[in-house]
View (cartoon, one colour):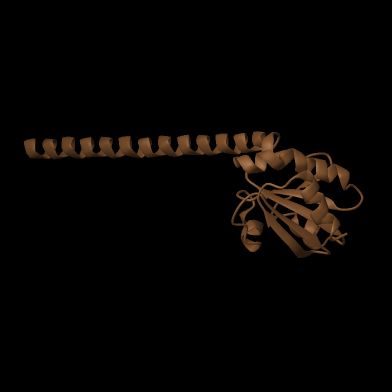
Length: 161
């Protein structure tokens, strides 16, 4: 009888330890989900400042809308592939917005977060940011990488108008 009680106590102890560790894993998972949600929130907030700012004449491009906005578009589109954490992308953000304002009615300007929209970034082999691709009638006609001035970007687009 003593052996049976000892075995029951040991099993109960093991069960308690197992429940404890399962609860720990569940809490860690919830913490990770909370952190992921915080990242999503901060990414959303970043889209309103810095490299992710989208001006009134710019289009925020996603994997879902890229085909309709760029590949199926009849005309010229300048796409800025950026990362919100990239200092070079942040440096050119205002110039890209100024380009979009200056080219209204001539060309479309879009911005795409290269990390968040990885399907399109992979398709176009974006290896560094900022990368600017000029599309004409849905086809890539020119690509440049690195910080470019407003005038450099306008000149590149104007070549394809």
